[in-house]
Amino acid sequence: MPKEEKMTIVVTRNFLLWCTVINYVVLLVWFLVFVFAHDWMLRIHGRWFRLSRDQFDALHYAGMSIFKIGIILFNLVPFIVLSILA
Image (cartoon, rainbow, N blue to C red):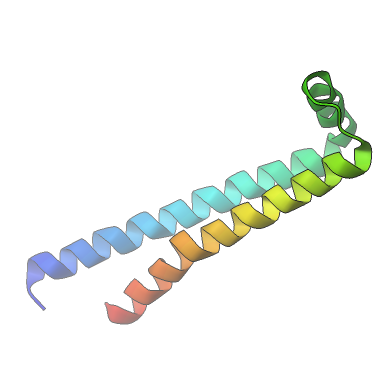
């Protein structure tokens, strides 16, 4: 492999690693705020949307699930593939 191509793979792999880490930190903060400030979040969102407590919980659970799947598909899997190739 030419040196330029190898450097590009290393840079891309590092980029994907940091994207994965930062996205998981965002997901963790979202989860922690959801768990420890649930009622505050419900009041804030209740000003804008008419959601029951169950709807609010379901929406956040689905949002966190979709976000986590996105992290895995678009950051973690490409990182693993580039790590294998490098």
